Length: 305
Image 1 (tube, rainbow, N blue to C red):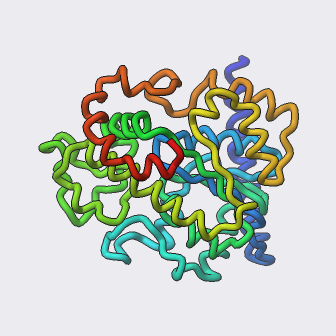
Image 2 (tube, rainbow, N blue to C red):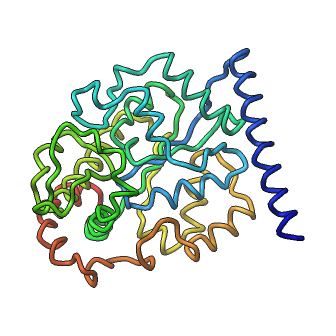
């Protein structure tokens, strides 16, 4: 009987939320509003962006769609419009229509004007996002190259999860002599040069490209709207680090959030193995990772590692 009532409750809750979303859509159409100080979480794929995004989604002051939004942003400006050069959306394409559609999506879905957003391509389009929303805050999470490249390699082995979008690519992907046929995560400019490379070279390219893009974009963002954290520091003291990030974004860090952050590492989001630092040194990819670390010396230094 309890199972029956639980199913009824979930069904009611589902349709109630659909009704609320539809009402907000109509309200927005009649009286559009714009997002205010949106928070964009950026970083390389497999750097800990989901951990940061999900934690910010716990804030009662932020609306969250609780999902990645790459389909929405790519729908506004598909990479094929740029001859598939990459997922970077140029700042020059930012316009009132984009601002309105983004505001519509998040307001309709959350009922909030201040929101948090994350996907694994936004790090390439920070100038575009800043042009759309000049009061936006950016939270950048970085991770040491060894662990990040190692996790990227593991992620490429899950093409059904991270590469389902790439079936329309205008190039043959034949990485590691055909071991990888679907491009995963994101396209950075120059990706075609790596379609027949080793998997470690591809992942090193992705790590360097997106982190370089983020660091370059940082120069154009007001310091009070830019916030950084390393994955390694988060693991040492998640409560203090998240408190710092929340407060620097002008958000309250209440006892509920403190409790959540104190337990956040106990139930990790979307990880392939136990949380830790320098895991790559004991992993099955260690020889591959070691081969490309020297090629990442410049970006590693610029990231502060």
